Image (cartoon, rainbow, N blue to C red; front, side):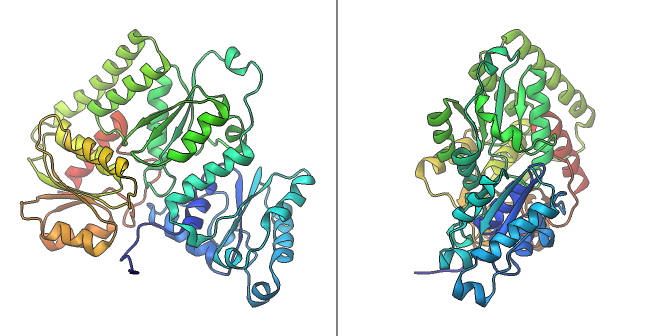
Length: 434
């Protein structure tokens, strides 16, 4: 039986691919699709992510073949060829990726052969033949990395690891734009790991570009910060290049979980424990010295969280473990298919240090999310969610904080709630939204 999802969070797989590529420095997506897909796919992700858009090329500035009836009947490869040529002449990108919309996917245009023509001429032009109807935007994130593994990432250069003085890690699971705080979160993770003497490939900050992607096979470890995403690409990465993975199942928020994250990474890389203890002590002292100055400013709350699994787990654990609030309800707004992923999510929400486990609901339909919050029999005095839940917060006349995707009513540059310092920002925002 078919059904309609009210207020789906994010767009189609094409929207996810578009936003991930747009976050890599000097990479240009080229859409082989009907008119409107450039704008709509950008609006679905970047347009719901704190009013921040790709600065290089996005939205209506994206090259597109703008397929019409003629291309549907007779094929659109010729128009695609001229579109790619025009993009190369006008947009000075380091790499170009041709993406297919639903129209091209239905008629079966061979975009691979067209991109190979430009590759033979020395241009970095790659095909990603995944029409929008194939899935949602989170599938787009995995699709991009599967394409990178198949076509872009090169084998490790000889003796590079041996000559490198510091370990190198790749960060996965923080999805550009689908996480409104992705820039700040990656910067905070980078900052912490750098203090441990680790080089970090975030891929989407520090103006890292396609050259970093090409040589990321030289990393010592892949760190996946997500409870379920990147499962297939991680296995492919290890099989093809021998790089192992460490999965940390949520975005760490606050001293308790961030220190846990640091120790797990340090153990995987066999870092010096003296340095690790020193960094943790410095960071925890920084956080606690500020929190000690505001004791009593926030009254005790019974709270609910609605958001993607990674954010919901991290925010719930911080409020319960570090701030002693009582969790009542957690709504996971992603569609989770694998039973083992659901179990991992439930386990990390339920196993709290002090508080009793909250009720956990999996619902991606906005009506079901609203009903779970409205009909919760236990008292709730704080709701942490997305713009979609703001109205429910007003209806229940409780404190509301917009902290998850989609986020439309605040501007976000490099703000984050993650890590040691991000938790201080989160606590400040809780007070500001009393």
